[in-house]
Image (tube, rainbow, N blue to C red):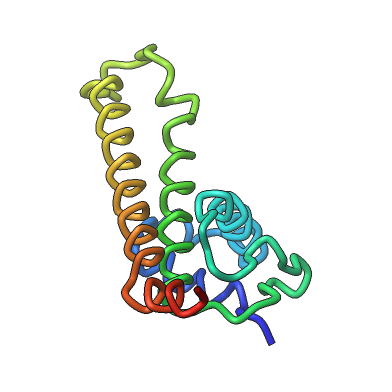
Length: 145
C-alpha cells in the first residue's frame, strides 16, 4: 500500500494558518491541496521513491514515503500555496478605489510575499539536500561498488 495524500495534507496544514481554508467545502479544499501537492512533485526530483507514480482518484502515491519525504513534499506544497498569493489580481493592481480602504503599499506586500516564498523554497531545498546526502545514502553508495 502507498502513502495517502492526506498524510502529506496534514503536514501541509500544520505549517500554515489560513482561515479561508476552513470555510471551503471539503471537496474544494481537497481539490486545492491535491493541486498544490502535484505542483510540489517536480521540485523533489531526487526523491529515492518514484513520486511520479500516484493515483489521483485514490489520492495516494504508489510507494510508501518516509516521514522525511512527506515533510519535504509538504514544504514544497507551502511554496506552491504561497506562490498563488503573488499572482492574485488585487496584489498586482496599483489602483486604490476608496480612502476607506487604504492599502499601505502593494509593492511592499508583494516584496514580503516574494521573500517569504523564497525563504520557504530555501528551507525545502535545504531539507532536500540533507535528505540526498545523509550518511546512510553515502554508505549505501559505497557498498554497491
